[in-house]
Image 1 (cartoon, helix red, strand yellow):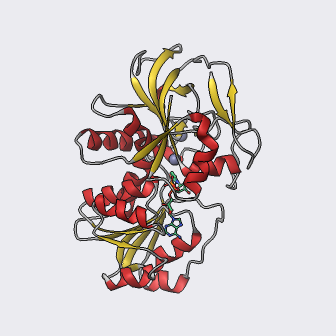
Image 2: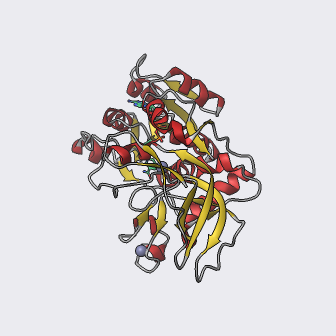
Length: 336
Ligand code: NAD
Ligand code: ZN
Ligand code: ZN
């Protein structure tokens, strides 16, 4: 099968012909129809984070396709089902996190396209208990970005606690951000979208953002404070500077949700203001299988719109560059 492979950090990915995987006990093999390009895949290929991925690596954790074969003991999905393979490739199922609806915190988790091979390939192997079922009413090309960008921002808005009277600022209108804007609106909030690229702000307006701010033209902190300050800020921009601006744009009692994972791992966080203003800072990591099911349900009910361009897997290196330069509408999706 054809796959895009990382053999060395920061080197271009190679398109290789590899043996097709076979399912072990509890596993399925999925014939991939669509696989979204998450900025995390770029971080993985660059070795950007304190915990490194395995090498060689097939990236990709927004894989959608049809179950082609199932291993021994699989009873929850069958051949022919359309499923998605998310970042949470598997978890132990029995620890205190797994049994309390916090499986994304499991210490024994495997991550698709990071600690195990992912979906930048014609076929991918996955744990049957951790694939998501894609409802009939959801197009596979839409399902791919929803599998990470969707569930992550849906969860982040939940964790941030947006309610109908709130002002929610979304920093970074990329793959994640364009969905965060929509979940902020669905939660009933008034949404401010912040991005350095004018096209992204235009997109945010068409997706329901009430205000847009371009930090190249005006100070986002001042602009958002003029609106009363943000009750929640969701930072999905790959830049510590954006995290600091998001923090300072909060009103008293506000919450900053950390979502993006820039290679530069640190920001300045003032203690005094955090205490006196009663600020909450919270990390939000993807979402659970239950969150993912809710994301698909909302999409099947036509409450969300996924914006993407199609690419071929052979274009993977140019596609990484396009995303890094923020030259894509929102998401890129490889189709097979
Ligand atoms: P993306 O490249 O599609 O989007 C990033 C956007 O941020 C772009 O539109 C860019 O123009 C904008 N941006 C960059 N610098 C900015 C700044 N200073 N101010 C405002 N906007 C700025 O990336 P993505 O796929 O949406 O992923 C975003 C980040 O989220 C990545 O770091 C990724 O690894 C991380 N991520 C985290 C989780 C999680 O569970 N926490 C899940 C998925 C992705
Ligand atoms: Zn992702
Ligand atoms: Zn566990």
